[in-house]
Length: 430
Image (cartoon, rainbow, N blue to C red; front, side):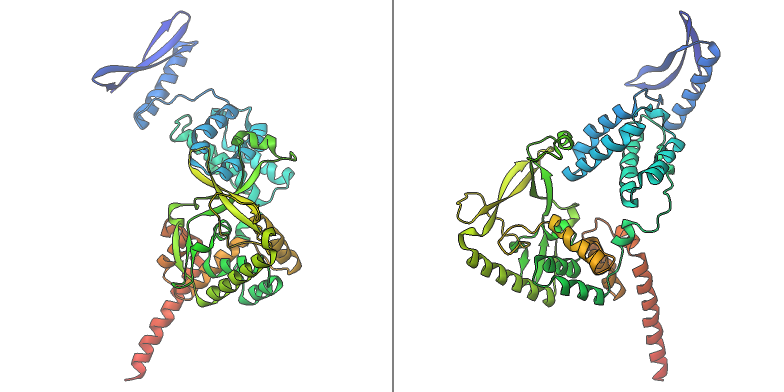
């Protein structure tokens, strides 16, 4: 059992104790600078207790939270997260976390400080719950990293956040199940437009919006009735380091473009079956596009793919629109989602349709609710949860089970009815 020793060095006191040997050599942990022997002994007792409990010497850092956020961004966010997520985190760091919490020392952040920050955002900021959740998620992620693997603090004060009560939230809208009647009302409103086909794909496949707009016609196999998800469409600035994007924002010549990137997770790469309804709709859409291309002639817009490297040295592809009259040696992107003149019908353009559905048609909606409706209808009507997981591209079945608990409960009730009917049917025949 290690003992704490103290000694006076100059006019200050120091504690030290024996730690585990490294490569067979003696190893000691010590710290000085205490005014009295009592202070050194008390600090040493605490350090030894923490060492014996965790197998390490814990010594809080003096780093400010603002400086720590820079460290976290460079060493975790830029290394592990996709560009749009990096940009979202950076926006929150620069506009929320640093201005209001950056002056604190990392070790001085407490649950009370964090909760007051959240409450202030709710009361005075007027932020929607979805935005407040994004802010606190970024805060929580940074502090979680400070615990493990950085080992700069013992526990995250963000673990104890309690969210203010909201009447409605984005999560509730995301998890809205759209009735068949409402979906018919929506599709009738947009019949004959690219929005209609985006809605049909989302409803009949459960694809995320970036996956829908990342489809090219080679992803659709009409013969085998399959659809392959292998890329997503997303918007980003090009030729600008992510840290400079916020400064570039608002300039007249903002360097942004649409790109093809990898799906959300590895399991998001998938090939799924599609039914006759969607197959026939997509065939009509493809025929209409070819007719428009003939009609517009040299003024029709084609799209080409230019390989670029992102900040993590991954290959991404910029989608470049060029009129048909201009020759281009780059490979062509045969986009599924396009307008009458061939231009890309992007996720940004779908925001118009979402506003019309929400406000003009008075139907609670966002694109993700199509995904939730698709999965809920499958599970409630007897589809195996494992198949639904694969279809949605969830990385593990727990995600599917947790999100669709209400649907699995209804399916469980249905299973009881099936068993009851089977037993009663058997008995009634005797």
